[in-house]
Amino acid sequence: MTPFFSALCWLSVYLVLVLAPLFVLLTGSVPAGSGFWWDFSMALGFTGMAMMGVQFFLTARFRHVSAPFGIDIIYYFHRYLALMAFGLIFLHFLIIRIDNVEALGVINPLQASWYMTAGRASLMLFALLIITSLWRKPLRIHYDEWRMLHIGLAVAAFLLALGHIEGVGYYIDAPAKRWLWSGYTLFWVLLIVYVRLIKPWQMHHRPYRVTEVRQERSNSWTLALEPDGHEGMRFKPGQFAWLTLRESPWHVKEHPFSFSSSAARQDRLEFTIKELGDFTRTIKETQIGEIAYLDGPYGAFSVDRYRGAPGFVFIAGGVGAAPIVSILSTLADRHEHRPLWFIYSNNCWEDVIFREALETLKERLDLRLIHVLAEPPTGWKGETGFITQALLRKALPSDMKKYEYFLCGPKPMSDAVQQELHTLQVPLGKVHFELFDMV
Image 1 (cartoon, helix red, strand yellow):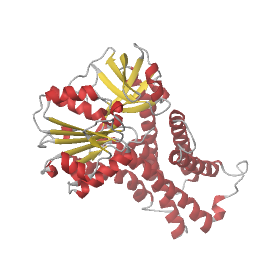
Image 2 (cartoon, rainbow, N blue to C red):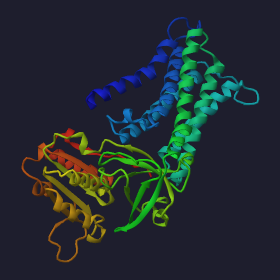
Image 3 (cartoon, rainbow, N blue to C red):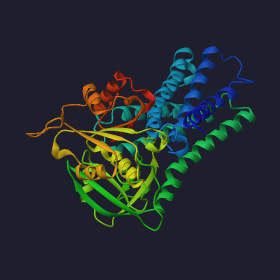
Image 4 (spheres, rainbow, N blue to C red):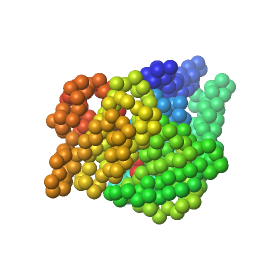
């Protein structure tokens, strides 16, 4: 099955999971005298809840689901759908508040029905979930703390909402409808159990050991891992994995990093990590022999998806070159002969992390390496400034439209280069990039 049809199938599955409960619950016999706005409010509530339930599925990292899109797209999809789901649930409350306020009963939780209090508490927790997710950095919430908070709020809000629906009992009183809703509830609960208990247990039984911590330029470090008691991990060049270091996989203190080593080796995995946050600043303190866990591989950012391409153009900035180096190393190990271009942007010459490795790869590949420096040293004869349309025209061949392009680096750089490629009429389908901004 092609990636397009696979993506179409999974989108259809998503729509069925979200809309099927709505059609079943609102067909057949419904409570008499409810009226249009009441029914509409119930429809919004059930749809919003179904969307919230499927959110757990989207973040479960099932490889077959993420493969056609890339897990970065899945996470952005998750983020925006959460906003839509919250909007539907809030409208469910707002319509009742305007049209039939008596149905809400008293606000005092000591006097109100438990299921109405559960509904109000769920709505507030969902709101807190959205706020802490969208404004985590301005609120200065540490990434690891936010992950734990995010999971706790999501599970608590969801279970309270399920209790609210069961307690109210509207539209699920018929046996068939109750069986449907109970089945959905069981599916969501089992999904939470799989993601938070079973999957970490599987990771726990496939540990890795740190075998090298190598200092690189520009406050970066390469972490080498070898499997402990198992065969290791197969991955495609350009992919990434979630790394848990010095913690149990149940602690949910994991961070995504691209592989920087060749995919031809599964017995030694390397990640090149720049000091950018609280966790990444601790990489240099890692001791040889420490235990680590990996969840992966993930990502659609790989040349292996385009085996028929006549050649590849890679454009990266800073440590964004890590997956590119993984790709180039893999191609070298495969004795690749197709033409390759790598335009690598950095602030200064001393910031070029993979400088020597890239020179070695030039000897093994048909690779044109173009360094671009924002602050060049005296006597520098290479490219300077930013990656512009003029630079691309100069560095790439006249038939540039037929190659596949891979971009990785800071979002402003990636956005600017995408715009320049669009101006040069490079087809949109030939430009590939990662969207992660996780930490």
